[in-house]
Length: 274
Image (cartoon, rainbow, N blue to C red; front, side, top):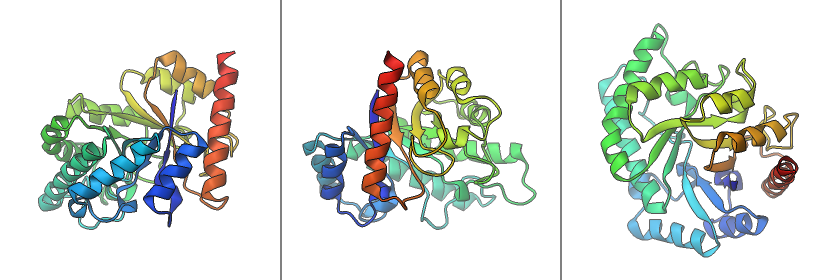
């Protein structure tokens, strides 16, 4: 099982320091939030992209991809009624796919709850139609760069659009591309009616990426969720992608969170293997 960490946790650290610490802690992958880099995707030069990639690689890390795709952007929205906004969103996803591939990654997690919410009075079906249009418009270039967008279900507390794995699967069926798949996130799956191990097994054919965290917004092992059945289900399902730590509460400190999360994951994995 391959472990990565989402690097926006290390706010204020330069890229080299992030990579050195993450590698030294024992992770082999780093997942990037675009807003945590040096500027908007189009402003990041080819030399800068090569430098990000080389520094990560020199430290034994693979840049696995991007998440928080639309965070801290303006004028972008997945289900906007405004055609120009939807077109700009498709174009931005293409820019991100180019960035992702140039960094060496092949996964982009679409979470961004505020930029996908359905407007007042918009039906779910209308939202699905608009979202499908946005993703389909971007898919040819995304596929050309061998990048997969992974749709992330989020809790009803975060968004009113795509709250379950089943919701995401319906959108995936509409987009109908092998480069548009499912992302599973433990915090989000805790809000579903089915147990997480069952969700892992049920949607194993669609799942391309996996985030680990807990309902308290901290890392695995830092909340009440037992990861033994989760990691066992991932193994039994044949999942061979990355397991990436993503947290939202940085209060315990980035170094402690990174170390404690990975230690717990490795200890739990060892237990499961016995």
